[in-house]
Image (cartoon, rainbow, N blue to C red; front, side):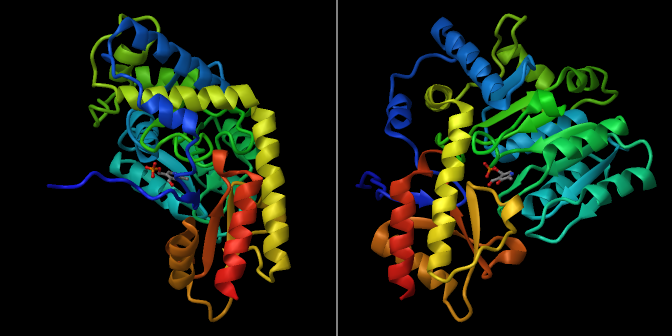
Length: 371
Ligand code: PLP
């Protein structure tokens, strides 16, 4: 007989998933009801309202996609981009590269603006790309690059796109609820996220929001969205406000209970307080790491508080240290990704993981393992 799976109790301080609070895990285990049950429809309305709060938007088309952050990215591109379109894609880490893939798979061309990994997206280069190319449909960038721990200036990037009448597509998978995200004030046409980072929910759901301008673009497409599952016009039949909720797919009912609970916790704390908590514990972590002689890989003014990239000291065995942290302390930190593999560790302070006890545990564990 196959035994039941009982996971170890880890402290999750990697690039996500983050620690999930007990209230969210408890919500996940509540009785399953039908995905068209009137009670579930009430929960869906709550989730949409709470997502509007975390995205800071009045966008009617704001909902959770029943699939991970990558599906949020894909939904943004397949709905807004058509064959022959031109999209300026900023790449300063792994995820900008995935945006390029998405653009090309839509039959569109990606005009790349590349910056060194570990630095922010250059506003000057984006301006330049707009001047060198016309008829740009959209500007796409990663607000919080999880692979490097860098925050880019979303407000300024959106302002450049507006000057050139281009849509703005923003990946804020790691940004949402950890640092300010102001979809309406900044004029973002599509922003998507994931549940497993600063929302501290279980992985597997992608909150997404589309502006009215983006909705109009979708409504006036000349070609069919090539993905049936991610076609927003079809999804709206289930999640939309004005239609009778009709079957599109079977929603992950219990995962939605968990999302609802995690959003309630964010609402109860308040976004400003959540941002301040991330900043506070980030400062403490950096002070501790520097006191141990370690150095940060990213300049202070563009560091993400929720994702701390640390230079691995010369001669230290990257994999060996991470394995020891896991084995001896049940502590997960992240490896470097892509070009930064073997060069940095990524220490997450996301959502419920951003707390003093985790900072102390991480510092103590690293000091022990490195000494
Ligand atoms: N975009 C960014 C910036 C991410 O950090 C991630 C995941 O880490 C994704 C997209 C993809 O999300 P998921 O792994 O949930 O599919």
